[in-house]
Amino acid sequence: MTLIGNISSLGVVDAVAVVLFLGVWLWLGWRIGHPSASKPSVTVLMQDYRLQWMQVMANRQPRIFDAQIMMSLRQSTSFFASTCLLAMGGLLALIGNVDPLQGVATRLTNMESGSAVLQVKLFLPLFMLGNAFLKFVWSNRVFGYCSVVMGAVPNDPDDPKTLPLALKAGHLNARAAMNFNAGLRSMYFALCALAWVAGAWALLIGVAVTAWVVWSREFASASREIILSRGDDSST
Image (cartoon, rainbow, N blue to C red):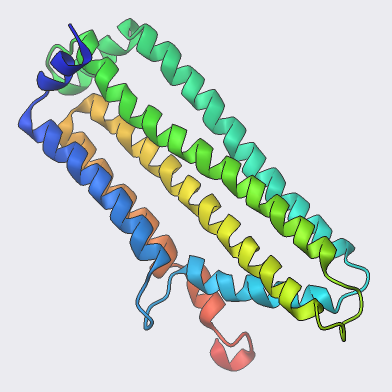
């Protein structure tokens, strides 16, 4: 059976679940990057700190501490990119031989699951992991751009090029972080997509749970409250 035939064998609920899955994933990404002014996301709040960091960096001598932070950030992107590649390799191997998964899917859904249908379902988490990999790789590259611009910032704080270059480095840092966070969201939704093996309703439940996890961490987490707090005793 062809890929189109395998897709057409899925039910209406499956189609609705996949459309909702993709819609929620895209909408959350847009909303986190473009929140309302009254309720900014953690990602947007941290952008201001990244800009402040680069301005402080311009006046710090030596800048070893800043270089160490940048190295740590780039190592994080490399780690997650490698993790995505390993997970994608595992999924590709499973798509090539879904027999071990058929028994599990049958027990979860109480109905026979064809190998072709399972292969189609596994392409969804594979797609999300592929997107995450590309985001992490690009984030690593932009952090590299940021490092180069940081190196171009003059040591003299009074140099007219110092502040503009520091701000450029800050904006590049923020863009790299945006891509890194997008990669993390794709990994969350890749885990969610695996629920489709247990059926369309399991995928819908997974979408709701994943959306809540992502939303709460950006808009209702303790970390966000700490970032927004004044940081003194009067705020506790």
